[in-house]
Length: 352
Image 1 (tube, rainbow, N blue to C red):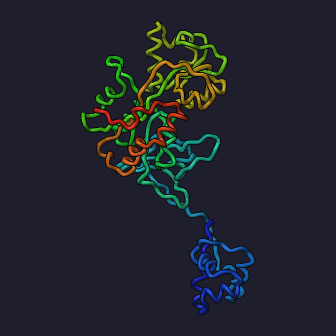
Image 2 (image 1 turned 60 degrees about the vertical axis):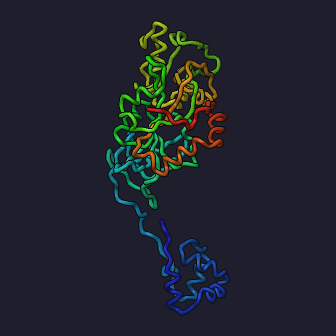
Image 3 (image 1 turned 30 degrees about the vertical axis):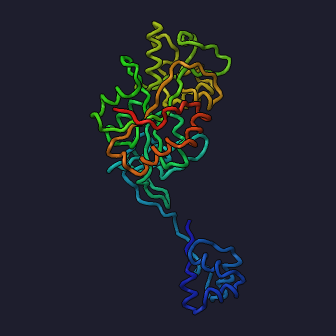
């Protein structure tokens, strides 16, 4: 509950200066000003002393809100499912107010409000929507290293879903690592199928390794070994799943041969966590995900992860701040040391 003070009004009605009241109460003049501004709530002794000097009751000097002040429910567009009461973050994307589930890992996450139903959020007291916050969709765990230099929310989804949301105007930035089998090129082919030439800006985030992730002691060294272990898989449209399917096909295998092929998790970190927790023996994920959970890693592919922005958003201050960060050596060192990424092409603008 918020505390309100009427000290300034009552003091002036008594014709007492702040300095005089401070001297009588045994506090500094700055303390009186801080109390009147609402920046400082005095202890019981000081509150009683002020009330006695001004000949009023303490309740006349200070009061509490009867109930926490909650904003009325706000209509939003949910990108990711959220249960009633689940914390969410808000972003303004064009004319849309978009909500995504706030990230959580055994902590209460930073959030702007809580979900009420499929289309509404109750804003937390004192919080407002964040029109300058970026909404970045994709699956790269390394995106978290952009904080705290950049105010953004991340929606963890497959590369194809991220690009679809970008096309629909639901996110500012889409991350992708999709390989075109015909050209052996990453991302450009998928982008050109969805967007007119010149309508998006494509900037490289990093080059990473993706491969087999397993607990120490699990003897998996190639795709054929998956026939004797349990895996967790990624959703259709994820680069990890496409890599798995390509390698299975090359080995003359299908998902029917693999236990757990139909067990789906969303994101590299959730997949690696499922392996760490013993829910599966192996998954396809990035080396950074394996590092995060202390797991073994066998590389299968070197991939380029790119960030895609519509030209309409490219001049937003937050988007320009994002691209500026990619060219800073401090971020590159973080990506190299913490995620194991190759940053030799980070910040490079690609033709799409």
